[in-house]
Image 1 (cartoon, rainbow, N blue to C red):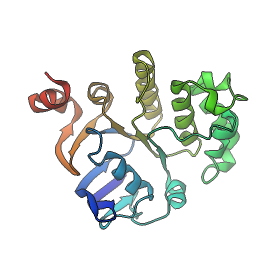
Image 2: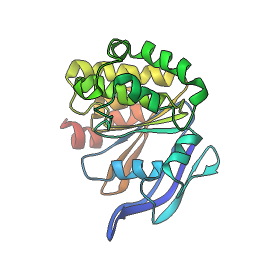
Image 3: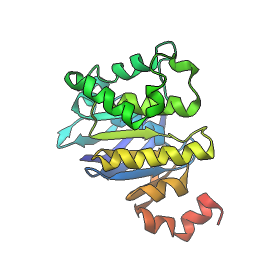
Length: 233
């Protein structure tokens, strides 16, 4: 579904991504793991069209999306839930959700609204509440729900467990699995190695803008090098 070949990107004269090759197949969860500042969010922003790469190419369902505008990439079926949620705090929960269908799936907005409320029943209880007054976990649910309103075929989740309590982290990963079971491919960008490899089919580990490990998630979880570097085991 998503094919990335030789992507290089950065900010001004600072190079961040050093030639990235990766793929995401339809209906699978792929984990992108790494520490802060190694290029995970930069790669997300390149895929979503917020950063124009200096080299390489990206295709989605056989269509080249390299250099396309974010709104056109959303229209093709990619939804990006950014790190930090980026909800509209002064709009209600319902208004935030409805904005998710602005560029894609507007004709199914009512149906999708009900589906999102079924997936996230706590959001249904707070539809009239200002989004900025929600708890951190509820804001993350809202950000994911807003992305799902566009009926994405690929959902990019950037650090969805960041700042959440352990109980909420468990719930969040359960919701990710449920979304994927409905046929949505997920690119899961996380520092939570154990949880991510537990739900992913495949994974990539990035360091300093390059992939240093990749493969089957279960195999990587058992790899002594990864366990030593990221789990201290």
